[in-house]
Image (cartoon, rainbow, N blue to C red; front, side, top):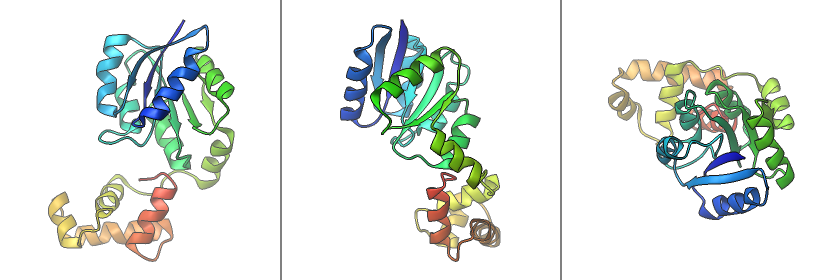
Length: 199
């Protein structure tokens, strides 16, 4: 029996996935949670073999949760609406064994769970091709941090206070991020980085 934990902030999606997987003789859904913060405790409590994680959840996202589960003795499959190439690279770096989008046919999801449980890696082929074409994020860790903070729309002075950096340093990192994304403005750099899954 393959023991599965589901983590998705949408109750309807969670319920549908649980019902779908529950139809299989060799799969048992042992827990359902609605946020990344709940996953680690439920993994310790229920000892699943496979954890299906949504990427975008309130609070701790699925990518951070996957990294947290790296040594937990279970395999992780990222299941997301947002098939962005950068997300794939970050998920694999976090230790995920699978990455599929939510619009795959139900039988493919079931097979993904079985294959990952058997020790294989499963990645949406179209997303894998896009990821190779797009490449890894060109942003340094600090540029990523500054650009992520800029999503809130604060001024350079606001970002400087929030990040404990000088205003000149914030401007330099924003300028570098704008150049590396091929954008003309900070807002465009944020959009490009978000669309590619780099933020």
